[in-house]
Length: 254
Length: 352
Image (cartoon, rainbow over all chains, first blue to last red; front, side, top):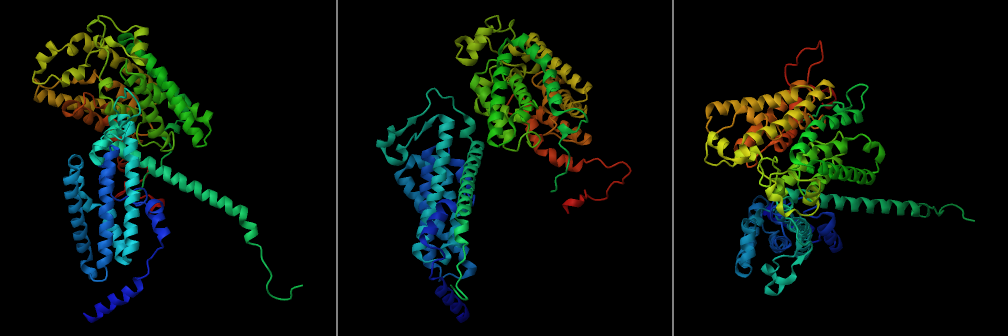
């Protein structure tokens, strides 16, 4: 008992420093380690509900709130939970937050709640949330953990919305339909009919379209990364000679 | 699982270049195209032109994006073959954007993204067909009828075909009718005899017109066999499996199942057996493998026709068996002459 308390204490002393600085956390969450494009976590809700922008936004926001809340809570209890029971404890925390979100959506956005259906309770099983709790929040102080949750959630939501917009545009020829489900009646006229007389492309609305859409998004990200890498390499090649210039500091000068 | 190393099958014929093979397959579809045009009007021919142009443009665009030599790959006629196969598979009066979507998807997603000719795991033409079949069920189910049976008593003229494809033909309904397979699928509670006597799509004239289409493709397929571009294994196994399956169920329950002859002479039976399933890239390579592959497609086609949601199942049958082709090849690799049969599994040295 005493030994375990000591190890926890010593770990706590080590872990008071966040493992990454804030800029790095933001960059990781939104781009470099994006849960949807790079870690490929939470694919099930991602492929199932992104048929329109409003569905994607609703699920994305719910996931973001759960992710942030669970990260904060896990970070708060990180020094008091024994290693053996940490995963059940994390799951309990995530489940409580998911229940909160479910009840809130039931109260304020009932129609959206009905459309998203089983995928709201299924946020509990979203690997991205448990993954962040175990990989980041259980090792970092509260503030970096909260930021990490927010940024990971934001990265997930942005990809969800991009995929939802792609599928809504190709599938129905519209954008932002039914936004009143989330933003109240004033948002009813946000609907943008991009193509008139558009034949519905069922393929894009059905899950296979989501797979291809996600594949295209991942390919696009890899293309941007590759271009950035080439640009940096080219920059280095230009800067190279000046950096490697040696200055003589020993021996007789002059 | 280690995949077998086999030379791309379309390059295996010594002395004959890819472009010659592709040209011959295109020529072999001609009897079928002529019969379809004769029966259903000019729509098929117009579809072929739209499909061909789209295929060449898509192929050229993606090749130049991938920084590959454009003219070299366009001259192998493989894109054009995909376009021809899709053009004859789509209904004759289908709007132009359906054809363009199907061909574009086939060339860009099913072929070029996987690395171009020889690397595609799925038959590009059937991927394109399945995509539009899932996406646009209404235009894809509007087949034209033979002129003696449809309400207008005539087949579409050339100008009417153009209007139906590029704009909108209000009277299109008086030129279309269900295909025999479609009619049989929706016979609901009628037994077979009543269905063949009452449903318009199942009358002798319509059945005979589809028989002509299938016989024309059979003729083209025999030409391919004679030229030794394809082997007999896949088509015979496919048609045999379809015959056996439909025969068994016809014997068990003749009042609700259709006869084997009906199944072999309607829909895409011959076209699929000789032109689609024999695609050298996405099908099996060994002869024994081809038998298994063809039989699998035949069984799937019957299953989909009899109990599935679509009237014909050639596209889905071929795509599903394309999934299985590498596995079938793995277990049916022929033994080198003079070598003993291995006791356990396949032992590929380089991969261990």
